[in-house]
Amino acid sequence: MNEIRKQRTVLHSDANAFYASVETALDPRLKGKAVAVCGSVEKRHGIVLAKSEKAKACGIKTGMANWEAKRLCPDLIIVPPRHEVYAAFSLALHEIYERYTDLVEPFGLDECWLDVTNNLKNPHEIADEIRETVKRELGITVSVGISFNKVFAKLGSDLKKPDAVTEITQENFRDLVWKLPCSDLLYCGRATTARLKEFGIRTIGDLARFPCDYLKKTLGKNGETLWRYANGLDESEVARFDAHEKAKSVGHGITCVADLQNEEEVRAVIVALSQDVGRRLRKAKLRANGVQVTVRDNGLEFHSWQKQLSAPTQESATVAEACSQLFKDRYGWQKPVRAVSVTAISLEDENAPYQPSLLLENKIGEKRKKVERALDGICEKFGKKAITPAVLLCDNKLPEDMKEGVVLPGKHV
Ligand SMILES: [Mg+2]
Image 1 (tube, rainbow, N blue to C red):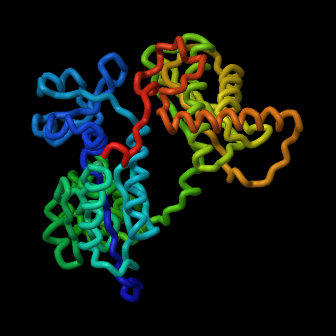
Image 2: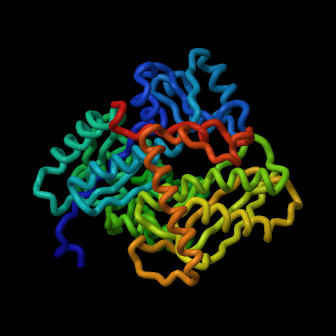
Image 3: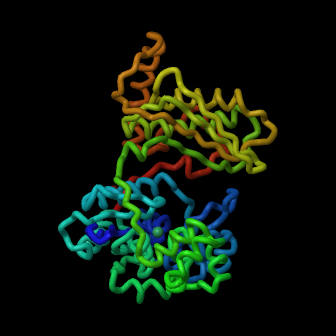
């Protein structure tokens, strides 16, 4: 059944040392230095989130404690994470990919598959153009894998990096891929790898040559899937890029520097998060019909509640009010709160028709809408730091990066 099908060309583009590269692109003084993006020592998550090539050469690994990293490399420059900046770079990367195809499927913030079967250009040419464009426009590098399926394209982007292209073909995959450990295959996790080892299967080649029926019997469907991957038989499609699909919800969350002890403190954080959620709704021209608030207590347990709104909104104040009320009504205060997130759900286009239930509500809404639009303009011009909601002025439990302005890619590179 597959013979008739045209051979696909799939690229997988993976941004190298993403967080650290973005920080370096925005601050050229970091160039060529050992840099690690870390949750700071004062915060609870004092671990390495990403490291530059130089830091990697010192033996620094992702997930390592800050102090351990600093001991390995005393010159290490530690930078706090700025997730909104990375998200902005991620979108900028997608925009570059979309110049070549509308079949762009993100995998995390810094990886994407592109189906370029219908692009008339040679895939190597496309890969090189993408590499050069990303470097020129964003100041970071990507590694690109080219292959006839998604699994091998992803493997390819791992084979040579940074700033490189690797092609895995029907002809060369046995030479290039089969010598690699099984764990290099997508979805071959630690437990599966251990299980395969029990059968003497260590490399992808071992897996490919093993009787499929036996794998299916012992490992179930996953055994068969991995066997197909190893033999180059992955047929999964690259999902079509769809901005609306992507924006099913808009949310933002943080882990606080110190535990939140009462309702007022939680409200302050909800207000801060809602500023961002509202701004993103307005930017995406979306309205929310519901909200969700999730908290994690200091025993690391999650609590999450949702509610529908009486009218759709894109106002930060309305989102904040609804979430604060929801939290107030539902949280039993068995334990202090460590992390909070606010999400706008049941999204619709801002032009979708609706009947405001109360004239008064509508009038207040109109006024608030104008105020928030004006504030968006100020933030766009002067950065997010320009405006701090009054409720936050005395708050010292928010992580520093929430109070920082965001620099969008393109402006500083
Ligand atoms: Mg990466």
